[in-house]
Length: 178
Image 1 (cartoon, one colour):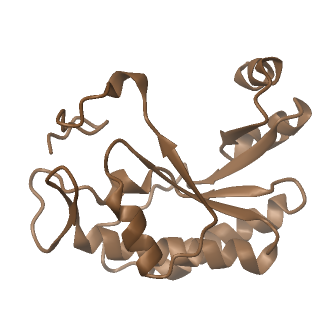
Image 2 (image 1 turned 30 degrees about the vertical axis):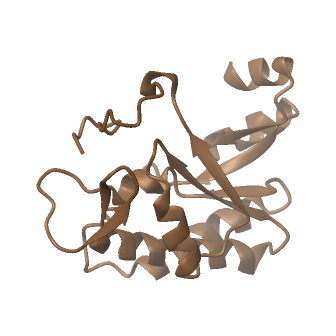
């Protein structure tokens, strides 16, 4: 399995969802718990949701369950892609380098969700570290999150081998042409 292979390769920590925390620990790998509800994905287009409360409640529940087992929590996953402007979007935009854009409405909802998650984890276990992750070349969302008060300690970045090194190939993992 991936966790035992990671241990054999000397990997000190690995990102996991909740179901794999105990397996990572058993394999002497520090789990980085990715706080992303797999059973109920969050729709950041739905403005009827109280995103702060949703993020806070979920993160607090997970931090309570894994306190003492997890030292690192990743707040959601690849937040840069969540806010990326997609074909068919309308409304206000935020800018990113390489002439890419973010959907401001999704960004505001994501920001509130991440603030809630950060506070939910910290209220239960203030000694843990919080990670915000992004991917590809959508880097400017991190500066917006910092400016808007999302509290985190580490920036994680995902760059996949199939993304190559051409920043002008503007297609998201989901196949959206940007």
